[in-house]
Length: 393
View (spheres, rainbow, N blue to C red):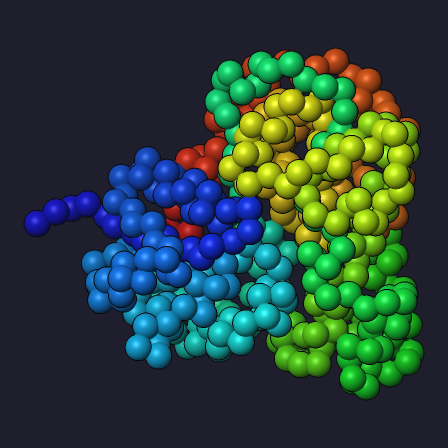
């Protein structure tokens, strides 16, 4: 009888192929720790998904994003077919997953009573919110790993420009016209008083408050997170979050001033003025970030309104030898000395970064050895090893 430990990673097709690449990174991390891993696309490999639903020898399965929670076999969710444990890896804020896909709310309800069902977050601020609903021992933290080329990818000739990787506009969710208060009034369907609407809008755009929209709502409205996960407040939370993602991204780009910037991703040309120092590039598949980032001196990052977790752009950029201009985030503590001198921060809500951006771009090219050290420390292999230890898997 084999002693090999086995695991499955489920993912669905995603624009720019991000989920597959991330799933492959986690698979490498598990294989490095002795696991036999099956990587299953639940859309394209239905026969393999069926095989998964029949197998009981997987020690655990990881579902990459909400679509894997929705996937079914004979009218039953695949996560219920997992014989031992299932880990739902929330790559986006849980409010958006829950608003888009009803199965996410069902999973949360099931997880209250079913000890096999777990949650994994790349951001601690949403993990803390969910801990008021689901037992904390079934909630774990797995920050993103760096996607970058090892060695030679960091020695290409760099251009002294900023690169922005991401989208803007409708790509971030449906956002109504007008200011934030108008969007709150329209989405809450009378659930909030005018005084609450005003207080909430002011708090969301207060630079001294938390960037996490849901956490801000819990505090201002004096309600629990489970109430926010019910309509109409769930719709209100996602509306505010999408509105602020757009506003905050445009705000930091405006603060770059006249420094040269290349934009990768949809929507930028439609929302920004035509200027000589802006270039609008093609969108790149997620896997190609490793080849695109090393061409640049610096990268601009904006997290998805998180308080304690970085977008993978931060780790991939540093691992590619780029300086990073990013919003303030408690995850900086995790970087320790590895981030010192390589990261410059701004306030996500009211950024003031014009002089900072120019100064950052004037710095000498980063020492390639720093990038190599970063790759080792924050690779998917290192991330998964630490997660296995901390979560008790």
